Image 1: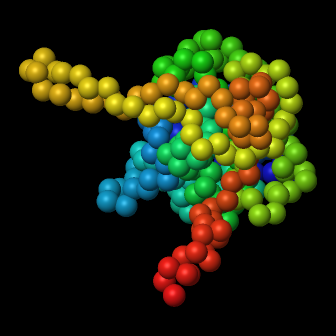
Image 2 (image 1 turned 90 degrees about the vertical axis):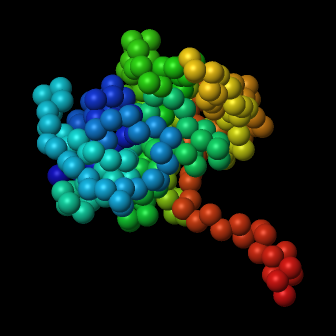
Length: 259
């Protein structure tokens, strides 16, 4: 029997990225798509607890799928506990835009869905594709989808390896970032600290009242061994992520302070 895969994302059920992942995985797995109805980027592990979650069975590209009126975490929970899918693996992505560094994975809905799956006891892999124009994250332009053939090969290869060899001990999520132009191979990495130089742009509306956009350019590079550096060098970054956020190295000092 084929392994079962629950496929989700944060770009929405109509995103070209999730259907590229479906095409990559359907020959090797029994894939069920359960994804947000609309764009949900940067919602992290946000969860809907103050409003009902409506779910509709739809058909996309001739394939039945579930459109969830909520967050990526909601989609995972619906798939696990309402649809009772019992997957062997949860795959989140392919996200349009890289998810690199502490900064990005803490807000990423793509990684958030994978973390939720792992928290519920299902191993998970998150896939993201680097874009050169940050506006592409919301547009799915042809210059991004043209690169999906190579991306599909990587998604299938990574998942085949994980399903064959088992999930690595001490990791809860495998975060995979694919450069816009792959010129190297796989590189196991650690998270960089930052991805963006955070800034705020102030503007005035037609009535002269201020409003703000959070913005800022990307970091050009980071130290060797990090996910940011690997992708900048054209390598496919493979980062093991853990749910345990305990800062163990601070425990002794904290014990001294509160002795």
